[in-house]
Image 1 (cartoon, rainbow, N blue to C red):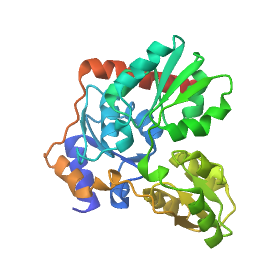
Image 2 (spheres, rainbow, N blue to C red):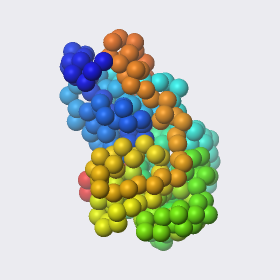
Image 3 (tube, one colour):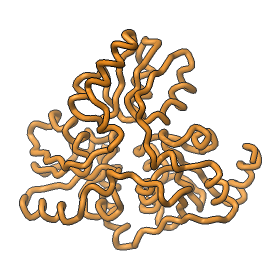
Image 4 (cartoon, one colour):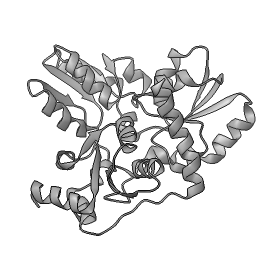
Length: 299
C-alpha cells in the first residue's frame, strides 16, 4: 500500500495514527503524530477523529483510551507490552498509604491503568520535574521506575521521595563501563542518556533527558557526533532533523516497541480490530492522575 492509499483509507475510516519515537521507522514515517509519551498524551485530547491507532505498547493504548473514553482506540499488536508497567502492584501502593498519612503516589506513565487509578499523579520523563514540583505532600511514593526517581529526587531535598524498584530492563542494562568504552571509541561525541538508565550511568554522561529532551539537546550542541543512550528507534527522528550529524547508539532495543508493524496498522484500517477497553471505574480514577499531570504542566 502506497502512502496515498494509506491517507485515503485513514480519511475513509476517520482515523488518526499516533506513534512513539521507539517504534520502527516505517511506522513513524506514516504516523500523523510522532513523539514522546507526554506529547502523545497532550495531543490525544485535541484530535477530532473518532478512531485512534496507537503505534506503541499496551499502556500507551490504555492511556489514549482513558483520555478519550468516547473514541475507539486500537493497538497494532495487543501483546506489545512494557515489562516495567507490571513491576508495581496495587497492594504495594496500599501498604505505603497505610505507612504514611501525608503521602502522594506519583506513577510513571509506563504503568497499567489499574496503577494509574490508584495514583494521585501521573508523570513522564519529560515532565517529572514539574509534576513533583506540584505535589503538596511531603512524602512521595514514586512508582514504578526506581531509576527515574533516583535520578530526579536530589532536586527536591525538602521531599521524602520513596522510589520503587521497578525499571526498564533495556535501559537498566546500560553500565558506566559502556559509557567509558563509547567515549574512548568516539572521543569527540558528547553522551546523551535517558533517565531510565541507572544513576551511575547518568552521573557519567553529558546530558540526561527524555526522548524529546535528547532531541532538543542534540539540536543545541555544536558537536557533529553524538552518542545516544536510549532506544534505537529515536535515530529516525534524529537523522531526519539533523542530517549533518553522526549518531552512535548503544544496543538498546525494546522488544515491545519492535512488535509494532505497518502491516498491522493497515489491517486495523481494513477492519481487523484490536480495540483497547478500560473498565469505566478504573478509567475515571486513572484519568484524575493524568489530568493532575496535565494541570501541573500548565501552571
